[in-house]
Image (cartoon, rainbow, N blue to C red; front, side):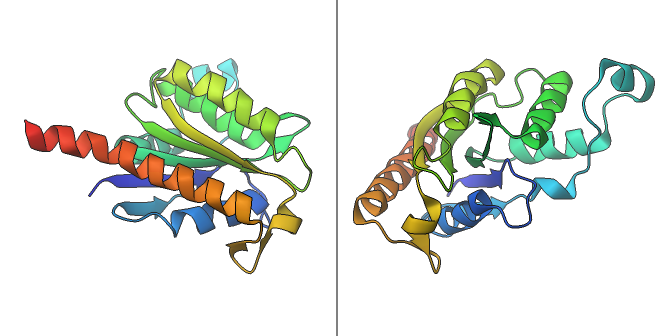
Length: 186
């Protein structure tokens, strides 16, 4: 059994990406899943001056250690003006200052949703391009468009979307298991 850390890049108390994250995390089978609430780790907006004067905040080390202790990651990202939120960008900036390769060796399932038809696709694409620079491997991604039309009462309403989510969950679980199978061979 592998350990998977799940977190959302949103700091909204009513985040639809957090709702999606909780739904997906609850469906992972065969692995231990922990949900990390990034809003519990207050960080100043990144500044070279703050880093020079005060150093890297302890909360950055706590988040990095949580990531390091897990084999895989499930991350949902929200979109603000066709980019990731400033909240999540700030966390990534701090983490990369502590350790440029803070995602090294991590297999990632990346997801996004939005109220609109694009489903946060721009934020998803941004993360798919940036995570490998930090050592992460985005194994699968999924965008759930029109959240309020496709998700209610903790379930996916659209059958095609449900099949898509089931497919990425199954594939991601197998990808994480591959490391376990390799370890067992040795």
